[in-house]
Length: 528
Image (tube, rainbow, N blue to C red; front, side, top):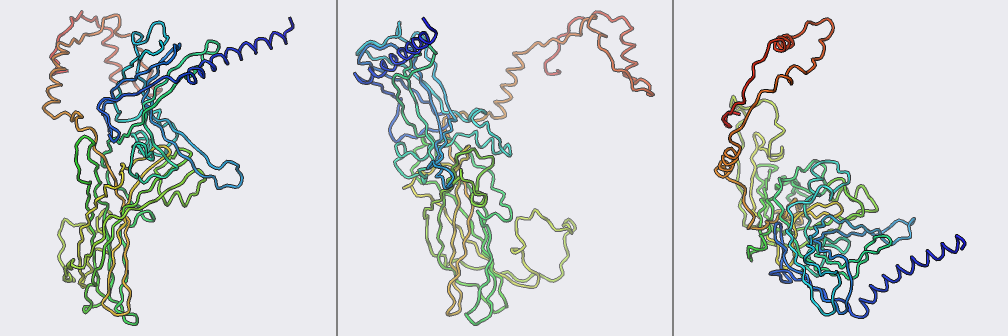
């Protein structure tokens, strides 16, 4: 028999074996697909899971025909899917896609739970229990790419919330089609091929989950000068009329409001989450006869920005950097939701008298200018001039008609929020149109986790645990080394030209003297 004939026969044998296993899997599905049902305890279609929630249940599999298998794989998986439309004429692909699998927990199954031999009998139902817990954080290998700071790496190790899947969230979560975050419980019936030990999936089923992990409120952002994403203060000059002089300057400023905190899914709170922003107004009149302008309407919107990419991000994305540093593999999707519109004409102004030209300063005050002051130079009173100030409290309540998810940053998808405030100002002169001042404030949406989570230890509980540990380790034994182990260390020679140190002399004298045999000593643990 020639070698070519043997090779062709061997190839035909491999193809026949592979085809037999493939046809076997096809036969199972064609003659009657196995009935697989994933049952979660205390589950409903609208239920939302969060950090440290238990996902317990069982998988029931019923085969219409007797079938052989090798393993049942039950996993809790989380993954992100994105795609970016290709605008370059140098490629024929319509889009670039990316999939990031950041979570995979496997449920071990005991051999006793499998049928012996591993052949599913026709018409018999087999049940395999599972139990998962939504983790607090991802493993470091979930983010293995380069990050410019450790802060970015830590942000990528937080669990992202479910996003972009209408099957788990009936309401709009403001996510584009280009990005999805999904969690599933996946079950596979697997058989291993004998010739190459590769796994063949005979049947597969999955159950989608709606997970919103806990997200703590982070410190306020440090808005640098030149950041175009956010505007915390704006000053405009007002005129008395079209051909008249100046009325004065008005400055509208605000700081980042506190986070909107989503309640725990198990709390049963029906009230929508609310935060509060403070709008500070300052009017500097052009002359003593100028009066503060009349305020008009104040509209509030919340803008959700979803950043998606086909390549991992090394930094926290922002809209300005995404547009300025145009990359074909990154995109941003912005959408706004109106929150409120009200009239603030009734807000009263407070007049501040001019400060004396010469005042004695406190001896504790510094003569140098401070760069850490919370008030900008425009907000400080000018000597010898009067000004007016006013404060407007702006409640921020997100509507329940949308599904709100926490602020998060993953490797290829991020979600941030901002508050847009638009204030209308009317001048007393005729023929002068009203002035609009707009601010864009960063805001975070945080989320509470499982309320049954064990709280951190108090000082009394920590002291009690330490006392228990001390009692467990009592007595402790400190023993002097045996004589054969003493004096065996080699001292480094002293540098040339320098005499040996006193420690070297003392060590040599200790080695020459006979050492007594010391007995082990039992000491009080508190004195160690």
